[in-house]
Image 1 (cartoon, one colour):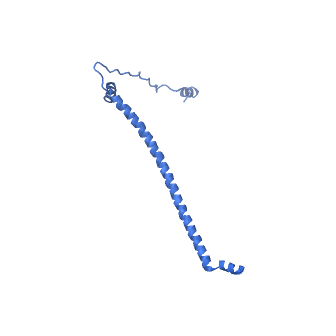
Image 2 (tube, rainbow, N blue to C red):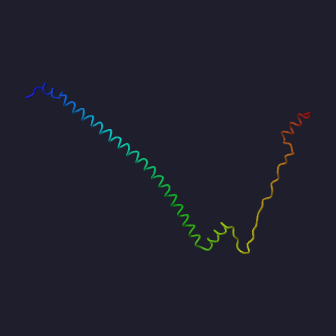
Image 3 (tube, rainbow, N blue to C red):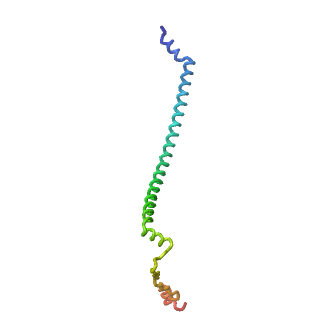
Length: 129
């Protein structure tokens, strides 16, 4: 049977201490590797989340554009819609229609020869000038 001193001496065995320190070093390296892997996964998830948000915005924009194009296509399939588009793009008129141009009356230009109220006031005060 080993005494307390002998058991304590076994714990201080240099080979055993070296083994424990190597195990702790290996454990530390493993923790660092796992930590960097988790950090990398976090940044990839964050980037993919931003890309998903952008893709969803593009999808909603494309869906709205598709709805507008389908509406325009349905309008073009009718005679009235075709006529409206041709009139708009090529400025066409039906036979018998005439062009009316409405012109606003010209605005009177301010007379540059008239002195302003301040200049008249200076003229009255400094009549000799």
